[in-house]
Amino acid sequence: MKDEDETNQIQQIVHFSYQEIEEKVNKAFVFAEEEFNIEKLQLVEVEKKKKIRHEYEQMENRVEIFKKIEYSMQLDASRIRVL
Picture 1 (cartoon, rainbow, N blue to C red):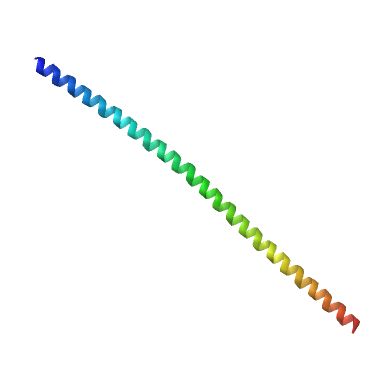
Picture 2 (spheres, helix red, strand yellow; picture 1 turned 90 degrees about the vertical axis):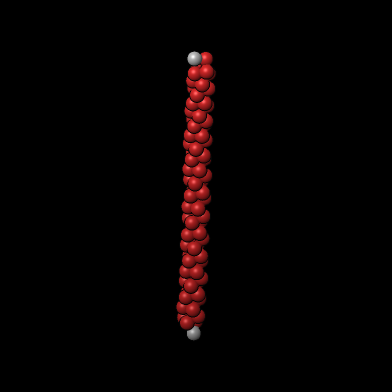
């Protein structure tokens, strides 16, 4: 009887330990997934900002080219008027 009680107690302790370990592992997985999602969102935001910045720079370049073309056309027109 005493051996059975000791065996039952040991099994209960082992079972309880496994439950605690499983809970801690689950918490670690949840924490890791939350951290992953936060990092992913931050990276996505950074990439969006880079893309927007790149598109804005391209637009600025197009505007500068347009201004240069416009200036050149006006200069040519004034030269033709002088001739």
